[in-house]
Image (cartoon, helix red, strand yellow):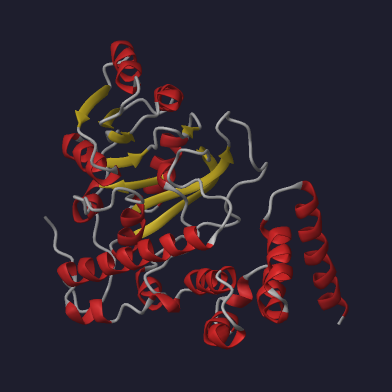
Length: 369
């Protein structure tokens, strides 16, 4: 296997893809009998035909396996692995061990692909032969398949070599979509797998937090998958609470430590030591400040957290409404801050209207200044 050891962080050299590469679709499933059929249908309807689908059922207690078996009878490109429940990382590892493709694509068992997704992903890899990590835009749907928003999840996507930027930004690369929009070349995947099986949830975060340290990111702006948000999936937290933010902070710390270990193993201690702390990430500063507000800390207790957020170099990239909320909302009592936060971050028609009004008002004031 190719080594990554180097004095400086740099993208690995990739071999040329064959004319018609095999694509391995990894599908971890746990109790998603309700959705797995729709997910498999979306994979089988792809315009690019040279793929295999490896479903790992992680000890489901519903009739998921019966549904999957019915699809295996229809199409020999599908395989099923059954195992005892152990979490998402164990399921992905088991599926990866059985895969043979030059390209690895993830598909969550409750998500849906657009029928040209694999073709577009292949085009991204072909556009830049040194791209080993491909992403694309997604749109959010609810448990019944209805659009939560009519617009794509991301205004822009990460692209290019982001390794050094990630080192300087607490290990973060922004604008990377969820699991069903992630694809990697096998040469890259070999450095990432097996995933740490302690990650019973959020295992895909290890993939998109490691890959930017290995290879160039390529992106397709099109919406190529539907990301389902519903009550039983592990990434469906829509309403932020102190509890959810605290859990997220624990996960981020664990992933950050995994990044340190990954960099030490593959590049050496010097580069691992140059990975900045999490508070160099504006997203972490954002969550830490919200946590301080939701836990009703005093102004004195949250002063450093607030200053770290509003003076962060990336703070100015946020929408005008968000900047005003976090800069001047500091002087509001918690109840009023919560109401303002709900107006800007919420999804109701009134909330969207207020957000639009705030953005427009301050944009026009800047133009006329």
